[in-house]
Length: 494
Image 1 (cartoon, rainbow, N blue to C red):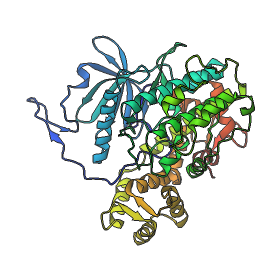
Image 2 (image 1 turned 120 degrees about the vertical axis):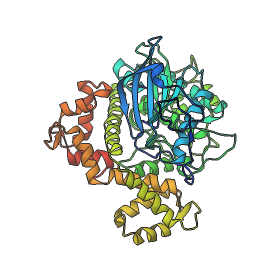
Image 3 (image 1 turned 180 degrees about the vertical axis):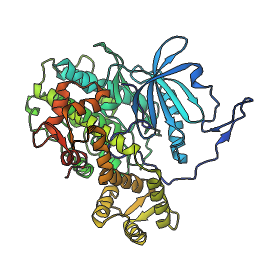
Image 4 (image 1 turned 90 degrees about the horizontal axis):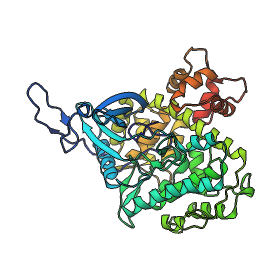
C-alpha cells in the first residue's frame, strides 16, 4: 500500500472539524508560457510540472478528495507514492489551508526515521500532488498476523516507535490528532524494517498549554477530551494507548455498534482488564496501557514518561513469551472488518453529490442569522422544520445526539456538517445500496466470498482473511453477506 493521507482516504468516524467557515479566497493567477493557458494556483510558490520528474503509475488507492498512485523518478528510477488531491473538490478556503498545513508539517518534521518523507510538491491545473516515500511493507496488523507468532515484546516494540513519533511531534510543536494502526505503514518486506507514521492531514501546530476545540480523529482512537472539545497534545498519548490495548488483546478498549455508542464508552472511560486474555498479560504491560488511558489529560503520562516505562523502554521487561493465538485471530478480524467498512465508505463518499453538502452549508447559515458561527439545538430544530423537515424526527434526534457531544446546546457549522454528512452517508438506503452493489458485482443480492476477495484485493487478503470477515459479518452463517447483514455492519442496525 502507498502512503495515503487524509485528503485521499479517511476512516469512518469523527472527521476533521474546524471553526467557522470563511469564504474561498481569490487564488493567484500565474503568467503562463505562450501557447499555455494560466490556471488558478492554490499554493503560493509556482512549481514545475510533476511529469518532468516523475512518471505516474498504477493506482494504490482512491478517496473522496483524490487518488494515490505509484510514481517513478525518471532519472533515478526510484519508486514513490504520489497523492493527487483534486482542486475541483477543494471547494472551501479551509480545504486549501488544510493541504498547505499538511505540507508545512511534513517539511517541519522531516528527518525522523519513523515519519514518512515528503519528496516533492507539485501543482497543475487539476491537482496538488504530494510525492512521498513509498512504504511497501503494508499495515502493521497485517504483518503481525502474517508472522503467525506474537509476543508482548513485539507489542512493546511497535508501540515504542509510535510514542517516539509522538514525542518528536510534540517537541516540534505538532499534534498528530489521527493516530491509528492504519496510519503506520512498514517501510518494506524485511522483518527489521522501520515502521513509518503517515497522514498528517489533521495535524496542527500548537503552543504549550493551547486548548483546541475541534472534534477530530477516528472513532475508536479519539480521546475523551477531544469529544468534550477541550484537547491538547495529550490526546495523541490516549490514541497510542488504544492501539497498545488492541495490540495486547486484539479488540479496542471502547467498543460500540455505532459511533455514538463508541463515544459514550470513551467518555465513560472504563476499559476492560478482566476478560481474556488480560489475566495472562503481564502486570507491567497492563500498567503501561493504564497510564496512557487516563481519562484526565492532566493526569495522563507524557510521551517522555511512557518511553521511560520499564515495560516499553528499549531492552525493557516486556516478555518474549508468545501471546495467546486468540489475540492474533482477534487482531485479524478487527483489521479486516475495518478494511471492508473503509472500502464501503469510500464508495459512498465518492457518490455523495456536491449539492447535498452545499445545501447543508446554506441551511446552516440560514439558521445562524446573527453570523455567530454557532446555533442552538432549538434553533436547529426550528430551522429544519422551516425548511420542510429535511430530516425525519428520528434522524434529527440522532443528529442532535451525535453533534452536541458536550451537551451544551450549541452547535458550530463543522459539527453540524460532519454529523449530517454521516447521517446521509450511513442512514440513506440508496447510498448504502450503492456501496453494497459495488461488491455484489453479479447483482445476485449477496456478496459472495469471491466477490469479497475481489473487492478487497487492494489489501492482498488471503482466503483466511476473507473467512474471518465472513465470520463476523455473515450472521446467518450461509457463507455470503446479504444486504441486511451489510447494513448491520455499517451502522449497527438492520
